[in-house]
Length: 85
Image (cartoon, rainbow, N blue to C red; front, top):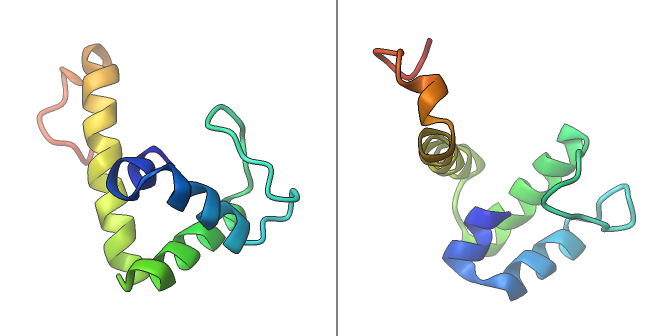
């Protein structure tokens, strides 16, 4: 959700959680653990909202996540020669 907040704002994050109709009554925090089906619901809802195909959104998220990992876990990744190992 951090990526959505960065790109589109906090209001869009709240709207996305509600429009996805999550199985947990739309309770969502950044520190929780959630079923992957809820993540997919939010990606699909975001896709409809911004008119970007789901595979493209997943790729954007993957790039974002890689940057987050490389900043926050650099010591664990420094020995890798490529990012797909």
